Amino acid sequence: MTGDAVVDQYQPRTELGHELLELRRAYILGGGKLLSWDELDEEMRARRGHVSRRQEPDAITAGDDDMIAHLDGVSHLPDPAP
Image (cartoon, rainbow, N blue to C red):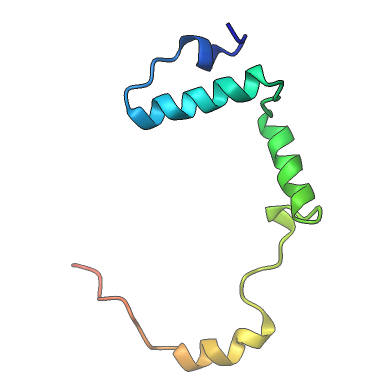
């Protein structure tokens, strides 16, 4: 018993599920700590230089204005069905 409800009780239905569960079991038994959603978010922020998704600049910048103007009116998608 690992003390982790997923490892101790879950019954995977696929070979991949079995493999992933065994990796989780090995990680926990080896002293690994599973992160909460908040801890995971903090680790991801730290790896990004403490920039969260909410703080990242918009994908479109001022330098993209010419490209947007060039593509204005150009559609790569078919017209939606009526």
